[in-house]
Length: 85
Image (cartoon, rainbow, N blue to C red):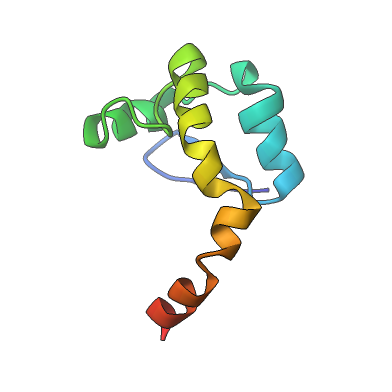
C-alpha cells in the first residue's frame, strides 16, 4: 500500500497486492466507499465499475469477471507482447 496527499486535504491510497485488492473489492467493499474519487470518475465514466457501489458494482463486476479470468488473459499474451513492441 502507498498513499499520496493530492488535491488539498485528500489522501489517496493505492493498493496493488492481490490480497489487499481482494479484501477491498471483493470481501469487504461496503467498508471502502469510493468517495470523492468515485464522484470524479462518475463525471468521466458515468456508472463505471470504478465509480459505483453496492448492487450496481456487483452486477458490473459479474459482467466483466469472465474477461479478467486467468485463461482469458493468458490467451491474450501474444497480442499484449506484440502491442508492447
